[in-house]
Amino acid sequence: MLQRIGILFIFSLFISTVYSQNKASEKAYKKAISYFNKGQAVEGFDYLQKALKADSTHKKALYALGYYQFQAQKYDSARMAFDRLIVHYPKDTSFYHYRALTRLYTEDYTGAEKDFQHVLSIDPKDETAWNDLGYLYYQWGKEKEANEALDRSISVRPSRSAWYYKALLAYEQDEKGKAKDYVQKALVLDPAYPNALRLNATLLAEDKKYPEAVKIYEGLLQAGEIEDEDFLDWGMIYYRQKKYEDALYYFDLPDSTDNVNLLYYKGLTQYRLKKYPEALTSLNQATQELDSEAEENAPILYDLAIVKFQAGSRKEAVEDFLHSIYLMPEIAQQRNQVGDTLELLGNAVLLLNRLYTPGQLDSVRIMGYYDRADALVEDGDIGEDALHSINQAISLDTLGSNAYFLRARIYYFQEKYAEALRDMNKVFLLKKNTLKSYEHYWRGLVYSAMDAFDNALTDYNKAIQLEPSESTYYADRALVLSAIGENSSALQDINQAMQLEKENDHTYLILIRASLLNDEGQYEQAIRDCDTVITAQPENALAYCMRGFAHKGLRQTPKALADFTKALSLEPDMEEAKAGLEDLDGQ
Image (cartoon, rainbow, N blue to C red; front, side):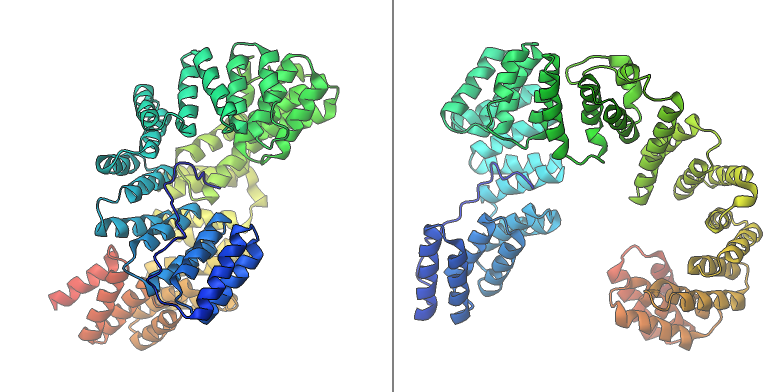
């Protein structure tokens, strides 16, 4: 969940009573507020619903509903309340502001930005809106826009929150000088502001001004503002100085915690004090609170393996060690190079080397690199990270056909077709008579992209022979057949693909058929296909474009013009629609 610190979100329930609601609604509203004031939220929400049933436009009741839903972190419900307020009271910009915050906390950053910009278009001097817009951009990862919005907020009226977030942005961009300057400006406005004090303590600790940092944490503790993360940072001051007993004292202060980093460093400290059973307990607690399949958690699992080994749980130690290598294959080499550091306990590769074989280690690393690359490709990330990972897998196993196949797909998506074909041919060489249909299909795609249509057809034919129920194979063969002028055969393939997909959404197949029908001059049938798509998907730009070409073929110029124009209104960069309009202009 997003942090809620620093937001100047001042909900006031004392709205002016100039609004006129009927007595039943007002009575239920007041009853609801009395319940909320007594901490009885269930009854409070019940009476708010009664108030709104009596008067669905009751402003205070709708506002209270949004406010208390927001406080309960039910952001979607809160947003719906503010939606209703905006419908009934569209001139009140505060409701756009509040709705923006609900969108912010549900990570609908685009919607939140739009609402904040609406507020600021009406009141450009709303410093709270500028401040919260800056916070939105900070969470969105848009540092430049965040700084610009915070600067606008400060230009209207400097606030501790705006200076704090500017300090945090500078700190995260490794601009320590600016961070120190900005955090001091926040503290001038409010010397007791906890968030600014925390950041100041962090900066002091990094400068090894430990007594000054400790003094800040002592002040937070005395003021009742201390949090688990503060105990972690406080303890780390001593951990960095290798004063492990002192560090453990502060790590131990929270009665209970689910802070993964606190539990992790507590375990590391206990290990360094040779308290192996206690270290094992702490690290086990840490792993219970984290995603054991996330790559960033590999170091914790790696260190847990070392602690388990020292505690006598050798089988589990090897399992955690190998799993950490799978998640982050580089970690084995990193530990060989850096040895014992601030976070790292040592070199498990050497410590556990009698409990696993070199082949096991290489196998796990290969799987780790391969699965990382595969996950990136599945997420649509076909850049250098994916390529680097699969190259690492291939360097460890030059005979792994799956790795060459995955790299071929990456090259294909990068439009490096010669490299993709080289790897696909390597797959064919390695697998010989055990090739799968999808491998023939993918080489067909590569050949097709290289305009080697005869070779593409050979592979598509083989793919269909091996798996005749796969609709995609027919669809892509149809495109190749169309490219070499065999439209009749192409239409047969598309119809076969549509038959195989009749129980599923096959819109893209209908549009391919419409295009083929246009090429064949069967314009009325093409229009019927496009109409089918438009009825189901009225925002489908390609359907309008294909229908435009059909109308153009029938010399129905006004209809063609309307369709091309509609397509461009939906997708302004659609080259096919632009070409259609240019052809009409030429006529």
